[in-house]
Image (cartoon, rainbow, N blue to C red; front, side, top):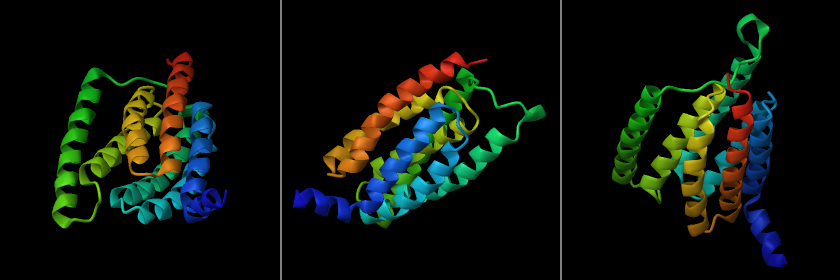
Length: 192
């Protein structure tokens, strides 16, 4: 019991970040604008958590998520004719562009991190960074396929964190797989 308590204390920011991240995704599925406030708070906690485990791009990503929280709030609040932003789809061409961009950007970032020797896992840090940014941007625009992108990166992230002993983050990303599946099915009902 003392070991669990000690683990929780040592990883308090990771624990709080996980709880707030779950609040974010649940509110996001429900298309509740408060999801963006939860993302903001989760990202603040996760800055410290990712810094503890030496994943600099994950730290940087949290700053992006803070910006995304403001962007998402604005997008969902300020719509044409005061109508709520509708769920929509991307074309195949848009997906191909973003996937190609994502893979190229991942390789460039990975080489950069490797050269500077500032990440314990340069390729995976780069991959998780890039392929979390793309669907987060899509979520701000209510693009339904964002959930499918999240499922793919959540599988990779969950396994990565399990293998590195970051159990709170591993738990979060395995939960995200279920949430993302549910989010996709829920948003599909609202697809225009």
